[in-house]
Image (cartoon, rainbow, N blue to C red; front, side):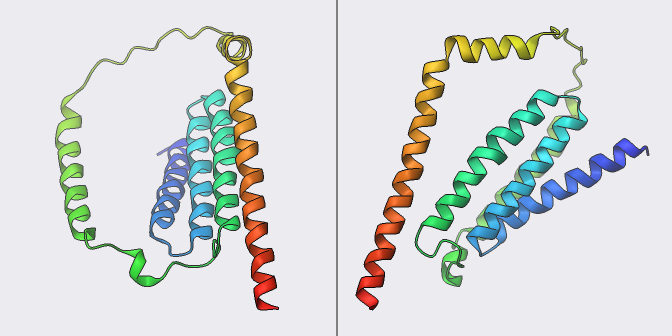
Length: 174
């Protein structure tokens, strides 16, 4: 076993454990932080595969934007950083979900090894990142900017709604 295998196993374990903690923790803020750790692990896996653009995009788009937006949403909603009540944590279909998960895992382990397609390395143009940048900025600059303005408007609206509720609560209590 080489050092690369060991590093991959460590990043895979970090990614899987943080994903497991993300879906099983009771505290929503901690779940968002576990999601960030899991997304970092995926970016590290991309970096190990020499897919530096995908690793950077993973960090910028998911960790830098989506996860932070989720954390803001959790923090700005009522009781966002607190825990959910215990009766809301698990539903009555947890046993069925476990059975379906085990059956799906068994099917995947039985079916996937039979498909041994020859792997061919495709020729990747040297300037692929430059071409992608030109396509995004040249052809899709307007939708990109509209999406950024919409996200900004949603964030400002969430802050306004959260502050309005807090001011009303202070008046009622005082």
